[in-house]
Amino acid sequence: MSNISFKSVLWKEGKHYVAQCLNVEVSSFGKTKIEALKNLGEALTLYFTKA
Image 1 (tube, rainbow, N blue to C red):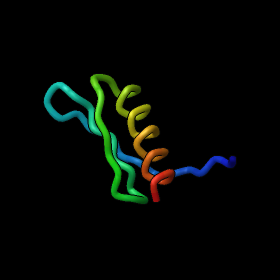
Image 2: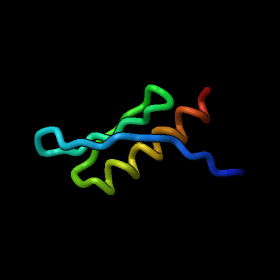
Image 3: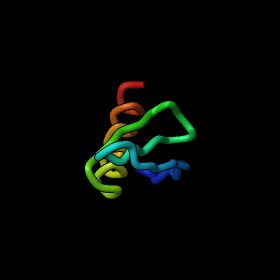
Image 4: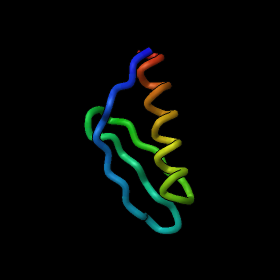
């Protein structure tokens, strides 16, 4: 399995951080920046596994 790099943006919305991938329409959130990015990684894995 190879690694692919994606561009993402991260911002705070209320009490949570939102992470959004700019290459595909996938986003996630978390209580911290690290959690939001980790959750985005999991969401991208699911997105490409199901595609």
